[in-house]
Structure formats: structure tokens, C-alpha cells
Length: 305
Image (cartoon, rainbow, N blue to C red; front, top):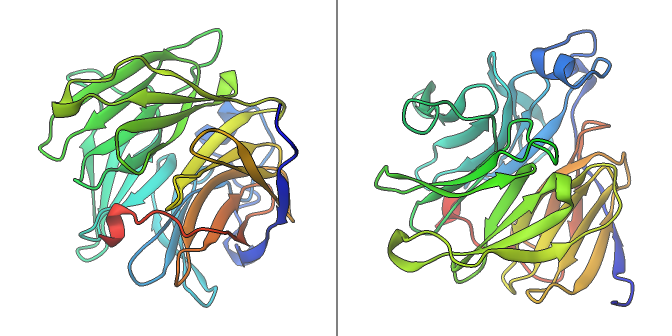
């Protein structure tokens, strides 16, 4: 349908040092995956105003921090399953945790609180990823173990005022999500159907109208995962398990294929660097964060507004 996308080879920018590996340890998340021991599982990259890159270790309940010179440290270590991470413009760190719900870490105070454990008196199935709007509204996916045989995944919006909206349900693995430039569309990766959906947002918090399929991917043993937007409206989509990030135009045309120079388990992305033209990619198999120079800078995030 389209000509092959031009290829960009990503290189290793940060590497989790072996001193921070937890190779001999297991966790509830590792056991539930029915896999072998994992030294780490990197996800949820996000930059703060000082240029520090935060990422989560989903396998072992840690939040890691990489300084601009590459030094790695553990910011938080707790009994949980952090999956996605975004930073508020006031410096607080919001985490989508599969076990606990929406968590908030305050680096200045050294505190952690549960912002939201579920809608009403219920609990979330298992939060996955999150994205701020320019007004401080927070969009997030409630994936749990939803799949084609159990399509109960949901998409929520937590307004800056504190009100919670259920935007969509009945999804088979809702994952990464990001708003378009005008903040009139919410893109949602649905892993188990290998799709990226577009959810048109009605004004005045009136929900969504006529959600559709923006992208239908093919291949990969997993499906689409994290996403990010650039200033031209192009959408970077991680194809988990394929060692790939696709860059699509705002019309859905494939522009570039960014290939991993490490393992195949690419998970999530974030734009960073002095001019936001570097795309950083977490790769969970080897415990590294890749980087690739991109043609357009990433969209300005709420953390830097």
C-alpha cells in the first residue's frame, strides 16, 4: 500500500549497569508471565526539566533515573508494578502501576501516595500508560490482562479538577496513548488487535464521538506499545517484540522505521535532548535505552510547559 519506510538505526544511549540487575529474583509480575527470571524490564521513559531520564522497572517495582552523563540510580524501590511514567509540570512523578493504580511521587518531599486506586469503589484492572494534556488533564489506560478472549480494557481521563471520565471500554489490551497537536484526538495503542485507535474528543468533557482505527499494524509477536508525538504531528509507535519504532505521518503514512541495535523487546519512547530531536527507546530484553536522531523535534510535554 505504501513504499517501504526509510530506516534509522538506533544506538545505545544508556545501559542499566549489572550492579543494578536483579537476575536471581522473581516477582508476582514475572511469575504471572510464566517466564524465566528477568534482571529488569524497562518501560515508561520520561525526562524532567533538568534533563534526567526516568524509567520504570516493571519486573521488580523500581523507578530508575539516568543522569545526562549516563549514571544510573534507583529513585524508588517498592512492592508494586510500575508500567508507565509521566512528569507533571510541578515536578511530581505520576506512575501507572498495575498493582496499585495511579501513584504520585514527589521528589522534593520524598513521598509516595496513591492518587487513585479505581473508579468509585471498584479497583482498576491494571494501569498501563498515561499522558498529560496541556491543561493538566491526565489520560490513562487500564489494561489488566485484557485480550481478544477477554476484551475488558478501558481508557480513562482524570480531569485536572479531579473528576474521572470513562472514555472507552471493551478493548483488547489498551496500552500507550498520546494526544494529537490540537488535543482533539486521543491516539490509543491496542496491543492485542495490533491497532492504534483514534478517539475524537468532544469539547466541554462530553466524552468521545465516532472512535475509529487510525493504524492497522501487522506482524510482531506482541503489538503496539508506547507512543510519542513530534511537532509536525507525526506519531512514533513502538512495535513491541519487533525491535522497531515506526514513525507515521498525521495521515498514517509510514515515514521511518527505527530499528533497535540491541534486543527486540522495545517497549516505550520519549523525545529528549537539548532540542528534543532525539528519540529515546526503552528496550527491555537487554536493559538499555536507545537513541535515534529524528527529523522533527518532539512535541513539548506538560512537564516542560
